[in-house]
Image 1 (cartoon, helix red, strand yellow):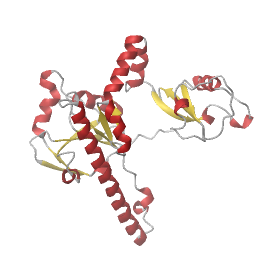
Image 2: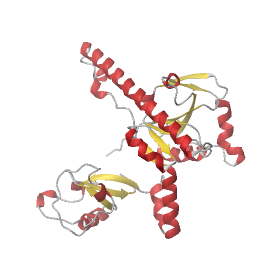
Image 3: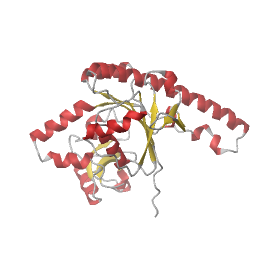
Image 4: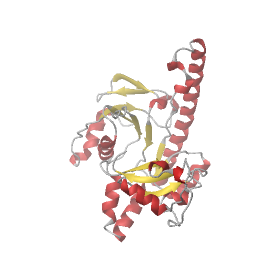
Length: 300
């Protein structure tokens, strides 16, 4: 069977970090060929190439999958966010245009030159404004397609059901105290970058061999996390009860490492304690269609 090549992606980075070149290089390893990365911030396009070199500390970017697009604007000004327009290194318009709902993923970066609380406040404001704008853009586009499809029902391209839902903007948070505000403010996605880095350093300091495992999980060429249907590993029609250890052995035969599961009758929040390192691994249970097994594997 022929494997379909994944389509190119459109990614948006809002803001700027000193290690932007490292972020771009890592992203280039993950995305399909001919993907686009839009850099949107208030820094003039003419200064960005020099900043990516970090005063000579970084080598010039050698990208194989990504195409860089520059756009200039303020992340908390709705007028600037309404339509992103590409510019070249001299600041002239290139003719490239894109709206927020056209992106496949979006990351609002923290400003590491400002204090953590100040950076988090600006990032939180940006994500709330962007979420609101994306919801309205999506609703307007869906309403327009519905109206057009009513007049031309034979055109599948106008079917509102074919409209892709907008991505969830992710905001980088530096201070853990900001986390309590996120649920109140209905912030749908965030990354506690400092906490993640601190946890990794603490684990490696405690047990240096864990560095091999973390490197495998966090590198582009290493194992990925997959959510598998339980029937991939067992025949549900035989009526037998199996423990999680049994399922882990079945997954191992397929060169996968089972780390947890989610019963069909529970959502992911309810199954939080079962998703990674579940308790009572030797307890047999009746597995059902719709149960999911969380695994690490080198390839899909």
